[in-house]
Length: 292
Image 1 (cartoon, one colour):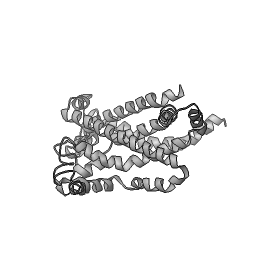
Image 2 (cartoon, rainbow, N blue to C red):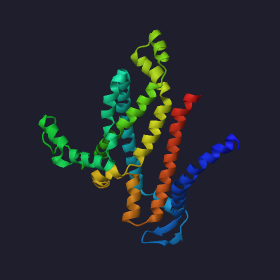
Image 3 (cartoon, rainbow, N blue to C red):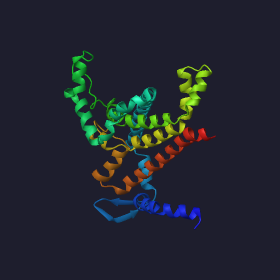
Image 4 (cartoon, helix red, strand yellow):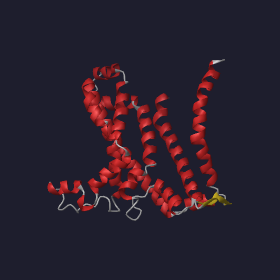
C-alpha cells in the first residue's frame, strides 16, 4: 500500500463521520429551502423554487437582523482581539511567572453561555441590575435606572455583546499567547540591536509573525459570534421590539414560532453561504499574504 492510499484510509472514518453529521444535514437544509414545508406537516411539500430565497432577500426584518448580527460580531470581535491580545502580551512579558494568571484568566471558558447570559442579565437588567447600583453608588450616574442596558433599543445589541466579550476574551488571549511563544527570540534581539523600540517591534515583528494566529482567531471567533443564539436569547429573547434579534434568532422564529420550515431553511442556507465567503475572505486577506 502506498503512503497516499494509507493517508486516505486513515482519513476515511473521519470523512464518513463528517458526512453523516455535517454533509447530510446541510444537504437536507438546502433541499428543504426549495419547498413550501410546514412544521405541522413536514411530509407535505410544495415545490416553490427560489421563492423562499426571494422572500428572505426582500424581508425588511431579515435585513435588520443581518445588520444587527454584523454590528454584534464586529463589536465583540474587536474588543476580544484588543483585550485578548493585550493580555497575551502581558503574559509573554512575565513569561514563566504567568502560570497562575493564565489559569485565572481562563476561568470564564469553563462557564456555559446560558450561565454567562443569566449572570450578565442580573448585572444589567433594569434598575435592579448590580452594575447600575454600583455606578450610582460611585456617583457616575444619578440613579440605578439612568441607563437601561437591556431595554434601550439603541444600545441593547452592544450590551448583550459584553457577555460574549467577557466569556471568550480568555480564548483569544490563550491562543495569542501560544502564538507569541513560537516567535523566535532572535528576531526581537535583532530588532532591538537595530534600535527598534517596543512599539516598532510590535508593529514590524510581532504582528507580521502573528498573522496565521490572528487569522485563526478571526475566523473561529467571527463565525462563533455570527451564529450566537443562546447568549443573547437568555438575556433579551431578541427584544425589545426585535432590537437584539440576530440572524440565528430570526431563523429560529421562522421555524419554531411560525412553523415555516422552507423559509427558515432558505434563510439558514444564505447565512451558511455568507459565513463561508466571510471565512474565505478572512483567510485570503490575513493568512495568505504571510505565505507570499
